[in-house]
Image 1: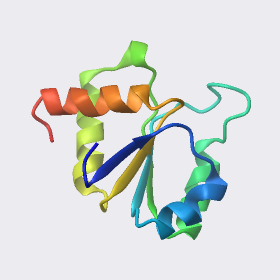
Image 2 (image 1 turned 180 degrees about the vertical axis):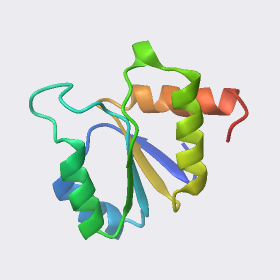
Image 3 (image 1 turned 45 degrees about the vertical axis):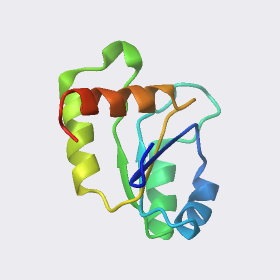
Image 4 (image 1 turned 30 degrees about the vertical axis):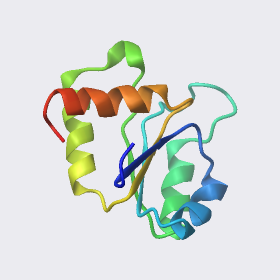
Length: 108
């Protein structure tokens, strides 16, 4: 999306070291835990990102429940997290929606 933000589909904790090697400094997970059986949970990402020296935040939402509070929290995370940020969800669609919503509200 920008030099400061990449939006991507599901990643895995085992990829966090490579993500750091690619130059990312933060990971933002917006996928709710247990959305599907086979996805890793936020606790696993918390440990893996810490080992990779990445800042990590979890802001779970589904697109049926996108609220202004979620958009504002995303904007606060975006402003405070070291850049560049890798933000992900299951397919990337919700991440894009969240980013565009914050832009449209003038929060970024």
